[in-house]
Length: 114
Length: 108
Image (cartoon, rainbow over all chains, first blue to last red; front, side, top):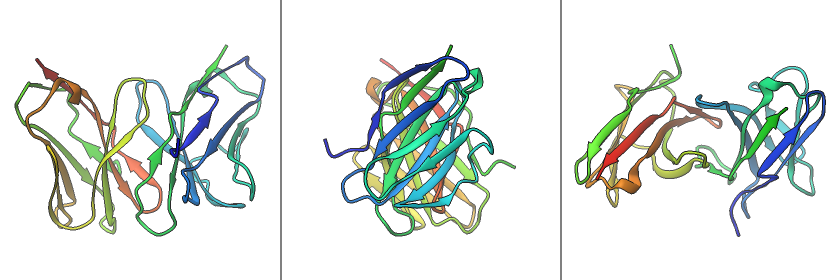
């Protein structure tokens, strides 16, 4: 499967635990984006990364959320001390280098907080 | 003013009809525009991209862009029940700004 791969598909955490969401971009794509979709709401940009660099994290909450895209391995979105309001679908998208390239989405991780 | 606004819907059309979806955007410098389709509980799927003023056709889909009016639209011809989904307009600098989506239901 050459598409954007996200795992896990579903993740259940209790309040106060940590959530780690993984994303491997499409082959040949070097740009990764994370979006959040709250129930009955639209997709909201969170963060844009290239290898070893955070380019724009203007959509990330200031606390508890972090993202990385290491030289080797998948991009990770990390949520510490999760709260009920973090329950959402988290989508990763990737694109080739270059401006205005279309982004292709993974299947998402549905995060549920008990 | 929201960055990207879509006609709110929901939109119900009979099978075989044309579904017309509209989107306006606020950033006059935007250069690339996309339509995504999202089935309930699924991820967004890219169906059209358009970069230049005018029309772009792909199968039963036609995207129209008017940068002067800051307007982009999507027409779905010969609508099928399988077209029933939420359609998201997205405008790109490098990050995508999405509209809230228009839910389309095609009645058999």
